[in-house]
Image (cartoon, rainbow, N blue to C red; front, side, top):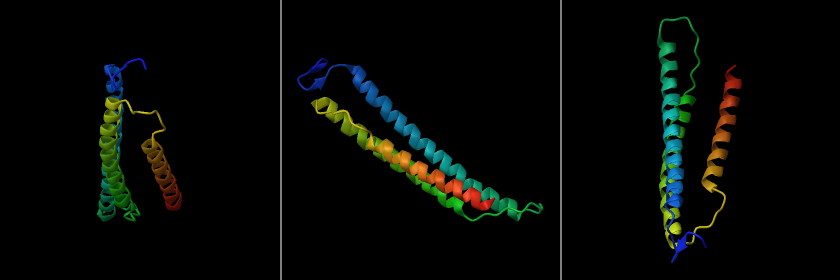
Length: 128
């Protein structure tokens, strides 16, 4: 196979591509944690608005704190899975056993985020 020598890939672009993918997953995890933190703090903001002397009626159910913590936890899981998958991929590249396949982690994350989005949409319709 071109680019292989004794089971090891000698083209550094392959490793750079694996590292770019790893860093993209890390950015995704950090983004999830940041959004989760913001969502969780928004619940605190709503409570403060309710406690203030303004005459604005604000309904807070505590769901923003729960969903915020869930997003932070999902971000942590994504980062841990990214590290594990990157180590596994590099080992497979070094031994020449890497096989192209669908990224299960990406599919699972997309499905979880889609379910989360549907839940948030239903919640927003419920509050209307």
